[in-house]
Image 1 (spheres, one colour):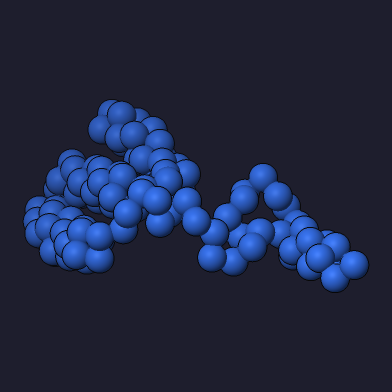
Image 2 (cartoon, one colour):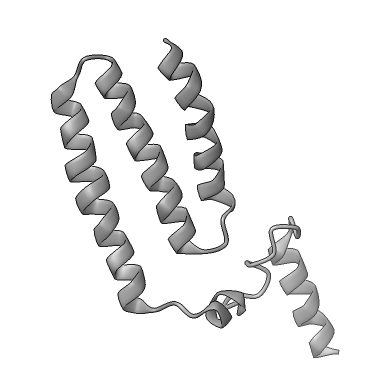
Length: 109
């Protein structure tokens, strides 16, 4: 029970970090934190098979494959700043379509 109360806030903070991180590599590392914490919870609950599978298959194989693809593609820091769809990159703008529509109608005048 103590392990849950120690690991649960770490897992929630890491999961929120995944959502709000700007770099994909940071999100992948935070995902590894969540997966390893889940594996530790399996170990505490006397489920050694799930513990080993979680570490080897999910954290070891799938997450490292994801990181390999990210590094193979080589996303540049300047590429992540450029908006490909107008209004989609700004989380502060709740009406992306409305701002795109207004800028389009202003350019027609």
